[in-house]
Image 1 (cartoon, rainbow, N blue to C red):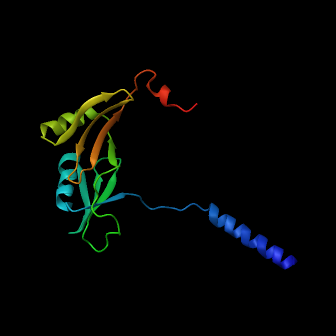
Image 2 (image 1 turned 60 degrees about the horizontal axis):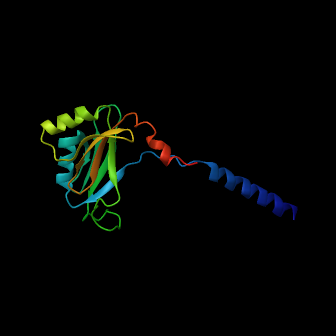
Image 3 (image 1 turned 120 degrees about the vertical axis):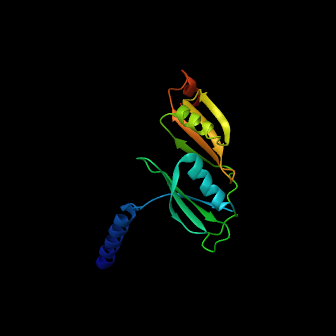
Length: 160
């Protein structure tokens, strides 16, 4: 009986230490399934200053330029490595936020380039200056700058 108890304690101690070891991720990025691979790549490269890091005829991995790298990928819906899903991304229930230092400057730059802006520059009372574009897959791209919210705006949303 004593051997069983000692064995049980040993097993539980090892399981406990395994459960407490956090998973160490190497990276995290979204992958959007698309039937508009080239149009989508061109959209992000042309309008949002992303660069292609890796490209095949079925997959494109991109990152933003500058010091803080934002990454994501696009995968062709017909490629066999595409995970089982509901097909191409239809943008329902999701949007991508890209936070910038100066939303107005980015807005003016894109406006001068004749970018397809779908929501024009606006200072929102919750504390953002923002505008938006919609990519070829229907994904709304929210370009935001964080600013001071209107006095008292957030009070009605705080948990009491």
